[in-house]
Amino acid sequence: MTLVRFFARPALAGTFVLSGIDRFKNAASQASSLQPVIGGLRSVAPQVAAYTRDEVTVTKVLGGVQAGAGALLAVGKVTRLASTVLVGTQAVNAWVEFTQAPADTAEEKAARRTQLLRNVGLAGGAALAAVDRNGKPSLAWRAEHAAAGAKRSAARSETRKNLQKSAAEAKKNVRSVAADTKKNLVSSTADARKSVRDAAAKTSKAAARNAKPASKNASTWQKRAEKQLKAAGIL
Image (cartoon, rainbow, N blue to C red; front, side, top):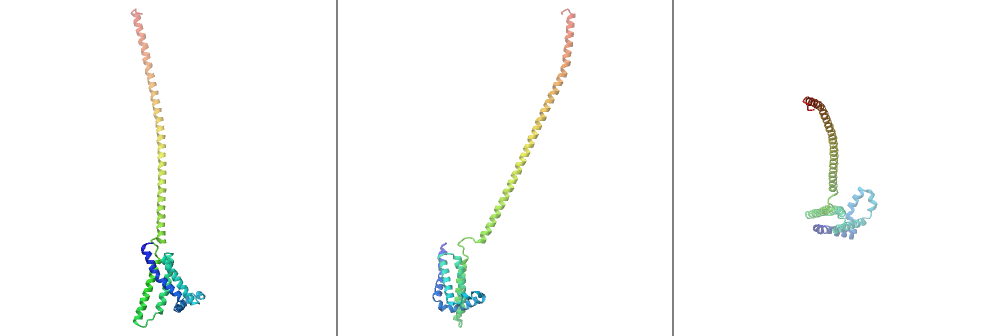
């Protein structure tokens, strides 16, 4: 509770408490002033007629309710409910005092108007206290921000799902590329080995083909040399 509320609530509630106590103590003399209000209530809701037969008791109840609601507002307990009750009781007070006040002269009319404005002002103060949330946000504000938070959470969840899906697809693509690369590498290695073996075989065959004439020529030259040496009498 702020310092302003600490002083403002008792200041506003004091008038209601004193007025309620006065009505409760002097119910017999003030019951007649409530007859128009009680009669109007009976005409609007006939089922309450059984509870409003004793006008003195109704006056005491109204005064007690007003004093109790004012006390609750003064001490800062269930202030919104108490203020709502005070708005209703003050509306009754304003109507009763306005209809019962004399208005024969200009001074009496001015006094009645001043009293009406006073009662309306008290009802307005009670109405402000009824909507005072002690700095806490209203249910509508909480619901709106909860909905916004839910939307943000849903958006973050959707973004997270999209990221996870993209990461899974990227991982799958990397694995596929790695598998294809490995397959191509194995195939290329096998082809290279086959090419080397084929080249080696071709080289070996060519060397073998070239070696046969050389061996034949060497044998021919050896025979010629031996023949010449024999002719010379060396052998």
